[in-house]
Amino acid sequence: MPQPRAPRILLISNGHGEDLNGGLIADQLLALRPDLELQALPIVGDGQAYRRRGIPLLHQGAALPSGGMVYQGLNLWRDLAAGLVQQTILQFWVAWRRGREADLVLCIGDHVPMAFAWLTGRPAVVFLVSTSSHYEGRLRLSAFSRRFCRRPAVRLVLTRDVFTAHDLQEQGLSRARFCGYPIMDLAPAAVTSEVPPLQIPAGSTAITLLPGSRFPECLHNLLLLARLCAALERQDPDRRWCFHAAVLPGTEGRELRALAAAIGWSLEPGRLVSGEGRVQLLLRSDAFAPILRSSDLVLGMAGTAVEQAVGLGKPVVQIPGRGPQFSYAFAEAQMRLLGPAVFTVGTGPAGEAELEQAARLSLELLADPELPEGCAAVGLERVGPPGGSRGIAAAVLEALRS
Image (cartoon, rainbow, N blue to C red; front, side):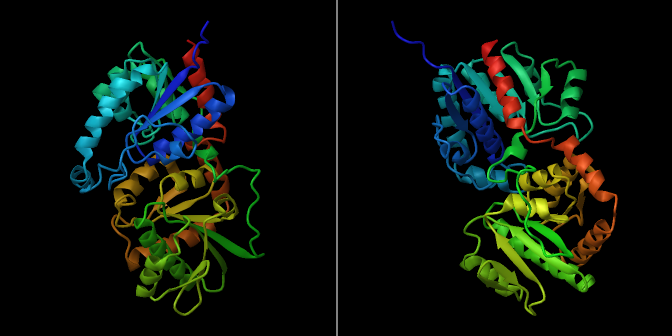
């Protein structure tokens, strides 16, 4: 007599951050139910978060120029030129043809993965990771998203924070629940109390720089943040500063050397040094969690990493760059999402005036004795504690059984 096959779950996600969340949830799904058969359909990019875990892809798309940020500037047109339409048609066909083999579909993102899940015709769980009621005080789902989430086949609608779950319940969506936000489980961050902080010299003020993870944008962001560090040193030269930048492997390349030289800085092994040598910025690609936990203040031009900083109770000062991701629109939206622990200086790409203003604000925040306690409360409210991946995985398995 043939053995029944293992339950099959299809994860559909539409963006770098969504893929990261999907990978973390997949880890815990397999930890709780090792016999599961997982498949993934990343709508944006090449699905690295799934591939490095050995999760087979129904279709591996090409990385498009926007990285999923199609709502910003000319990104949509760049994606269209790079084959967005052709790739989307093929993904729709794959979802319709092969997605029907799944026992349950987990949609991670917004209306885009919902559309693909609808094509499969299978029961679904929705994780609304890319939106929150904190943006406007009330979550306004699109007509399609609202209708999809109310379908009998949708067994659960998960949110990224408690406030959004309560809001959707008040709007009549009784299946809305908050089971955690996986971002605080993100490897290699492992941003928990078990990760020891760096050994910062006594009497030093530790500043963490988060320039983002999109090349080459992150290189330009890094040098803009380096100039902000120089402004901090100018405004308070008697303070003992300790600057660390959390960067990706491969950041210290020829392109960074040339960009640094253009603003009068030099690239040395493991560090950027200002022209006069007064400011040294240590570059670390292997110690994100210790850097973040040891910091007194974060200077951020990133998405997920800034969320983790807020989750750890750190105050964050943001300065907009030229994008395509970390523009003023992104920074302003992130400030609404993450609340009073995040401060944005300027309404356009930062220049010298904005850098000086950001330095003054940073010094004011460092002098506020009540800020750490307030930021810790904000972190729990807006991001939540570690363990979200396991909480969501348990809820998905419950939906699979129902």
